[in-house]
Image 1 (cartoon, rainbow, N blue to C red):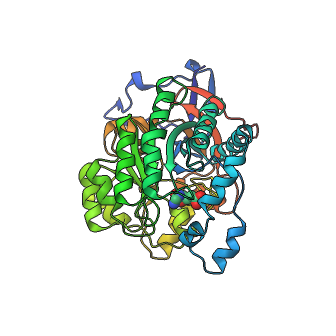
Image 2: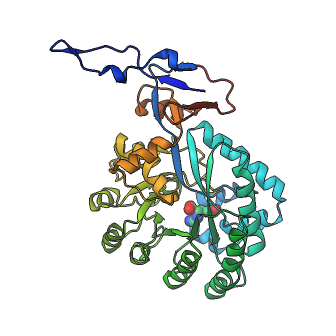
Image 3: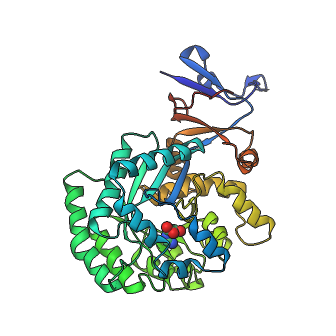
Length: 410
Ligand SMILES: N=CN[C@@H](CCC(=O)O)C(=O)O
């Protein structure tokens, strides 16, 4: 079926020196299309790409709210056996089917907010059996949702209780990665990246490097958590080994900026988490000026329950109003959410400015926003309405798949 999406009210032909400004070959005849979708007055943008999520888990962590209100920090809760470790225990005991159902519910809500490709991490298993279960959930979901999924193996998300970081790194490098490789070679798992929570008291630089390089040896992209809570040198490490991406980066140093820029390592910014944990803002302007490709992610996880890329926008705008640092303009925001985030998860390299980057962005499905400008979408989202019509148009003129949203009306 050929579909034409009209997003303008009226076409006006311009004549210059008695000649039409639009060559006749460029005329579009409505007769050539099976369906014409008039979205006049709405903004059509490439589908959003969420560059960082932890969406497979069971058991919520609302009880930690009280601890946070009483002043406990993220790392204090983590080190006391809560946080990630709490979710690990709950995810371990959860049936695979339950994890799949929870995931599908979450991903459908992401889709209703305009996300069309999402990077999904494992990391609430730590040991192979549960990590494998999480990766199988993601694999099964690929056939059950129109949202594209890029899987990331993240067994190094926390050090399992009773192990030192070195022992846990040994287990990952010597047992888990070979097991993952055989599953991938047998075609049972498609995994794109490897991730490590590189943080003081979790996996520090040496262990992080060892785990990332072991992942790279089996063909995975190196895409890890760095410089979030302490300035450990994650940027320098990632740039030095040519990592594809580093997330968080609130504590990124000047040297880290230079290293990342030199190696073309993407920064994945997670404004919702920075706000929830009241972290200082990453040096976004400096990153962009140095030429680091900047992407955005929702960082959906039990600690930062944000399923929507659009809803994370008011956060960056709020931050700007507060005269704190993000300063991503509307265009930067869109580029960060659709193009660079794609670079984080795609095997193909593309920069925002290159034609390939733009073409790649156009290859993602299109979504239709409620308002005329990207800007308008922020308002209803901030009030809790879904601001995006769930339409997939692949590509601009192509097949319309109305994604399970019977209520689509313009
Ligand atoms: N910082 C580490 N990982 C996650 C949080 C995971 C959790 O708290 O469950 C993040 O990216 O924010």
